Length: 156
Image (cartoon, rainbow, N blue to C red; front, side, top):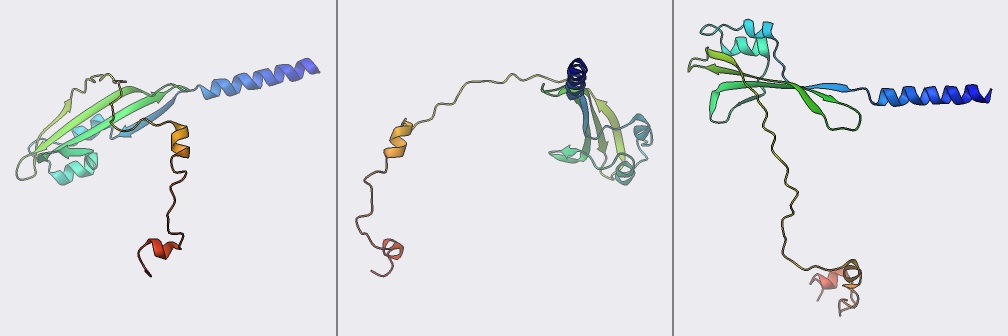
């Protein structure tokens, strides 16, 4: 009977640990499907047509409101590890002055890994210890032992 309980608890623990390490997948942004892109015709479709087919853009170009970007990522996280990007896409839609689509294209979204710098920025100031912080205000009392209104300059 004791062996059965041990075996049962061991198998239950293994199932829980296995389930905890199952990768979770998330989608961020707007992953535009190919059939949605094919609904848009260059030179004919308007901004309203694009909004109906693709939805709101993820962002617009900073200096040109006639360029829209649809950015999406699929990410996978395994256990306690950092999430990894498994798929990424950027679609660029540009319009002419009349609001008609000039070009729609997928942008090559090669990632550039930027290394993190672990250095610390030096700050000026006093280096005081915890003991100095705790005992720093001992003896610094208001010489007038009045109430709060006296210290604020009222009722003098």
